[in-house]
Amino acid sequence: MTDRNLKIDCLEINDVQLECGIDLEVLLKTKAERDRFDANWEGFYADNFNSDVYTREGNRLVYHSEQLIPSKRSQRVPILLVLGNPASHSVKSGMFFAYEGKGHDHRFWKEILKPLANLEPDVLQTQSPDKINQARKRRMLNLDYKSSFKIGLCVMLTMPSAPGDKWGGVQGIKRLFGLKAYKDIIKAESKRIHKIARQFVRNRGAVIVFQKDAWEQLRSDGDPEYSIGDAKAGKLIGRLKNAPHINIFGVPPTRLARPCCNVIEEVVKKLL
Image (cartoon, rainbow, N blue to C red):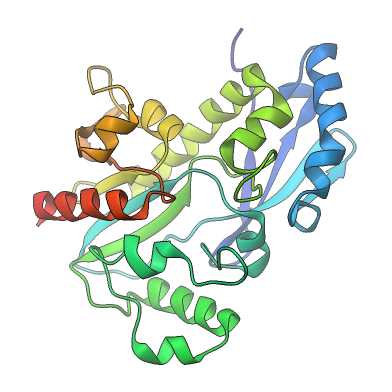
């Protein structure tokens, strides 16, 4: 089966948030696929903050997502970080990795990003979580941080979900739509990522990939296939598909903060 001419429309609402839409009739061609989605929808919609970021308009599924691509010019080396999919509560909050657990500062900011940039002056920790998120957003957009890199954030899969449990993460989106439809979604999403990478990274810098499906979609033929062992060992090194002048590196998922940070430290050595 082809990709069913699937198109995911995404429009920028502000510097971080996107509004995206997808036609369920184009995506879910068979009655079995649509029945599966309809049976799953209520449970998915009620989970976490999904009801705050998703709406149904007939056969059109509309949702908010996130993307942070600074437009400010700089001589810094551009690095595009490609994550899995957004957490619904972060999309609602208006900033990547708004918090984890019961309002704790996310490991992404405390540990994972440190080899690339320091956005964490002590004064931030005296502020409310919302003010901290907004300050981080401004600093990333204005390149107001000490680093040799200009960092952009995007997601391989624009559809948000809870951080974990039955409907959480990328697996929650797979469960909602089924594997066939999910594969079509990922193919459509990869076109968006390729466009962002070409515009942002250009002929310098690199793409760092945090998720298995993202690596498989973005790597060139002949680059190593994904394995968590190779990700932890820093062996996922390749070239962006159809843009071999752009280097890509696969790192462990953010839930594995220390191994992820260790591999990023090695990537930084290669880029400087």
